[in-house]
Image (cartoon, rainbow, N blue to C red; front, top):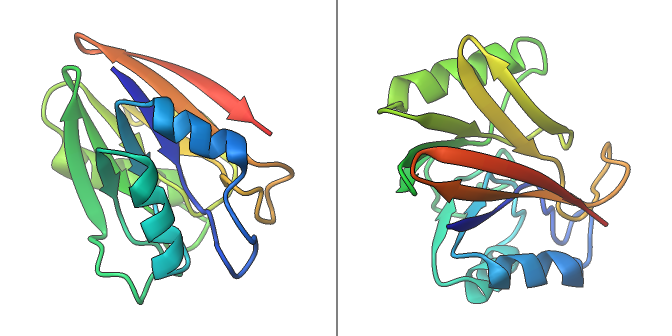
Length: 162
């Protein structure tokens, strides 16, 4: 199973639109995960139109969207726990890892956003993925996302950058 993982699109406050290559990755994927900060109902709708299967959470810029703060989805034998990670950068990784642990069940990976910085790390035994900003919104230096190939409980992640 191919999973497109993105976050922090910030359309229209920091970017006009999603880069074409990001849209193509979403269309190729079996499932899409967005870790929040769409920034507008139009941005949410445009991403929703690109995929048949979407798991999404709200970020601190998504007050107009009725999205949960935490969502889980089981794909290819792995539970993905998705949360934006809203709050101070201090203790960010620990805060997100705690949220993921609270929703874990079997092999689990946490997906988060908020910092606009790529991350694939393990904190307190929990693998955390942050795809950066799909539009390259500051402080990101360029657009990025992750693609995960998930099979029978194994997750292989590749970075995609514009």
